[in-house]
Image 1: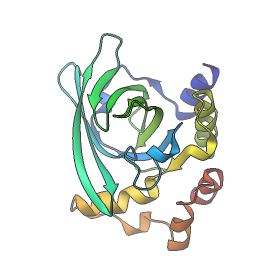
Image 2: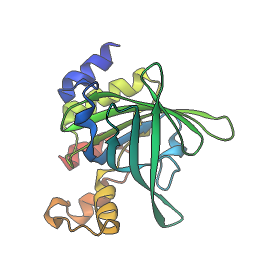
Image 3: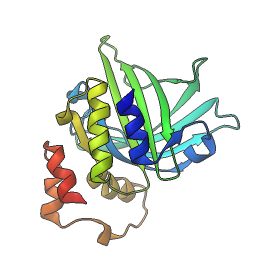
Length: 202
């Protein structure tokens, strides 16, 4: 619980009960999971979030995202239906119970519990944002929070370096190429040693 509060302080986040802040365009910044196979390159739960939407009371939350498999990128939208405990339930690659736990206009932290068709349970942390890398402090607190969730540091992936070019190209939006790091640095962002990734990417 302590690390969860530290994570909130690091992101400057408030409890995610103002759902108006959740709606709009977002990019996946980082993903962590206790089963790395689910979120590695072309993993089934490596979700490149594009947009969040809610109905009037946010009893239904729409999540639009891309997945990349077999060198094919596909756009998907799921609807999460609010449960009595405040979480949302939807079907994608099995059964999912997800929740926005902290949110500001700049970042949202989600947790998700997936039970796939084989009955395998995987716990996730998704961080979406407005196209900004995590600061070193935010990354450090994410590592601590992930450990609290029994997710090892090596299972934290920075996906921002890959999501923007792919998603914005498919969406037929133009994007500022000056945002992208030099090619050799972008390549380094895709290695598994995530702690060095953030030092190089800030």
